[in-house]
Image 1: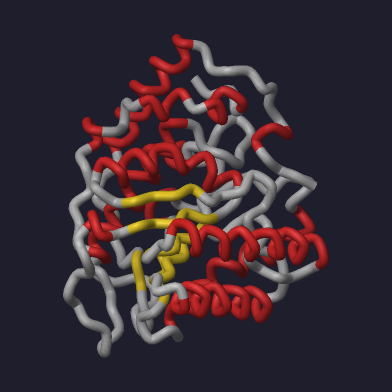
Image 2 (image 1 turned 135 degrees about the vertical axis):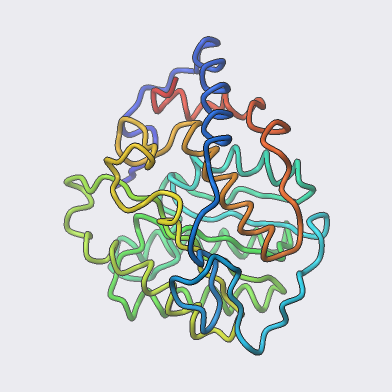
Length: 286
């Protein structure tokens, strides 16, 4: 089953008045994002919590990596990540960072769990190999998907495989948890796997010796999909321009801390043409 954007919304292009409202709302949302308390980007030995500083493994160099112009970020995930991709691309490119969106509206998982997830994962791994060869990323950013079904052991094994794949490609792996979303009838039977996936990802990061970073997005969104700050669209799953822009600003700040570049100011990207992306029209965004 495909929980893509098209499953709930008509394929109508956004109207101009919606686009204008989307641009204003996106900028307002970005400007409203305040400093996040707590250690949200962790490596081995970091765990959760802390004083807000970037945590690194004791054996890992604290020096920043190459500047943004030397970075190429491959963005992976499902349709939630797809809705976040347009502003993420805008802010990273404005910051001098290369970007390619490899999120899949049909799944995007790397977890080889049950039969259905395994079929989706097979496609994801094939696409990843092609993207590594063509784009040559040095940062692979994977957002935990709504399809990361399987046991905690299967989830950890799949994230470890992703880490090895990134390492062989000369890239660092960043795994970010998904925003809170509505557990509808489709997702209900996978609820335990959805809950365990970010924990498994954090465990992989903790055990990686600094080779994998985990970003806890609950520092931005909280954990309640019904809360106002979750900024989901009416489907309770995907974000409109406002939420996507808020995520892009926040996540890029985490990447900037890790890799030594300064994200572009919101005024340079938050009201760009990305706000008219057709996916927001399909979501009924204003």
